[in-house]
Image 1 (cartoon, helix red, strand yellow):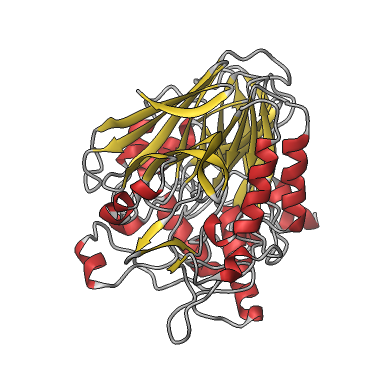
Image 2 (tube, rainbow, N blue to C red):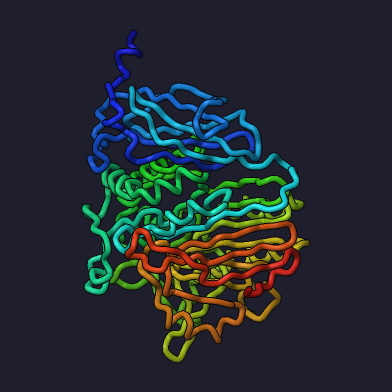
Amino acid sequence: MGLVSSVARPAFSASESPFSLGVASGDPWPDGAVIWTRLVRDALAPDGGMGALPIEVTWEVARDERMRDVVRSGVTLAMPELAHSVHVELRGLEPGRVYWYRFRAGAAESSTGRTRTAPAPNAAVPSLRFAAAACQHWMYGHWAAYRRMVDDDIDFVLHLGDYIYEAPSSSPAAVKQKVRDVPFDIPKSLSDYRRMHALYKSDPAIQAAHAAFPWIAIWDDHEVENDYTATRSQSRLALGALLQQRAAAYQAYWEHMPLRMAQRPLGPDALLYRRFAFGDLIDLIMLDERQYRSPLACPLQPPRPDRNHVVALDACPEAFEPARTMLGQDQELWLANCLAEPARARWVVIGQQLVFAPLLRKLGEKLGFATDGWDGYAAPHQRILDRIAARPNRDTLVLGGDIHAFIAADIPARRSDLGSPAIASHFVTGPLSSRLADHERLTAALPENPHVKFVDARRHGYTRCTLARDRALCEFRVADDVRDPDSSLATLAAFETEWGKPALRRL
């Protein structure tokens, strides 16, 4: 009786649906996936307007879009301490097939989502297609790229970070580029981050993309604060205050993404690096390059913020110290073990946030590097390059984001010799809607980066990759106008790499 009295059963009607943030699925395994929703009455209220009691939610999974052939169903509780979010981990489904799902609370019913389980282990998979996306600032554009992605024949979406942006930009140049208002100040508390995530989830284009495909997501910096590291923030918060902010940001991220219980944060810590298998075709490794890293090398002196900047190669010996880490000891060892194992699949795909290939910058008459990227962590970067180089087959594809530009590059074996043999291929997806990088500055440094085959920081969109047995094709798909929510898309450039031969070839 006590349990019954402590559970709210609001009389939701079909016209008063609590499912205004949509539905989503993610982290597909051969026997299931996570299905997600969050109940809200007022999406932008600190508590979503749902009160302080758990709410019963019914869920169903079917083999058909009309939800007639239901194969799994159940009842769960949307808990107030989790912002009334729902994360159902499905089990017992058939591998490599499409399912549909929905939720119900009272008389209200959610939209129907579509998900796909991963192929069975060692199943012969001829090809798979996925989209890689990142960097979707609400303020600077609409998400026609997601709206058009729904029409793509893809199997899953990789989101490589900056799902939200913690701060609206206020510089004169930024204001001139503003497309949409952000109605909040900079988030610091859990309720602040919840409201920001709810704002982003309210967009119909991203709801459509979440409902159409399972997502596999990793965070970058803006989910917490620009250029933060494990123990430092650009605003130089005391460690205790930063960990409190991290805990709030991590919790809100988990509440709003289709993630498993294993990824639920414990205070300021969350295990987000993980591995997926797609039959015998793709061994997918997702890395977390924020939570465990050493502070930025050669920081700017106060009162300037402790943030990314470009330094000359000979002016920052700290960046080359062997003790520095990007991944933390445990994650780096885990990655080393993944790469040292006998091949589990035809391709190894590494999903991570940053530009992974070295990228020299022009700094007056000198050459430099950006301190926030892998170039600011030279020793651990070379250790990972050595692990990739030691693999007997040239089978590794590395994806990245963060820089707000599309980049296609070979990954050289040695950081100190950019003309050394390629050991892997690298594609960096451009921003969905964030402010673009300095195209002229990036292209001016191309002669110093012979391994970089393509750079474009003038367009917004995502990257579509098709992996077959003997080749990987990646296409940069860009919107005509990021200010137009119905903009059409086109292919900016396409590159392929052959299995066993990592050098890129433009099509």
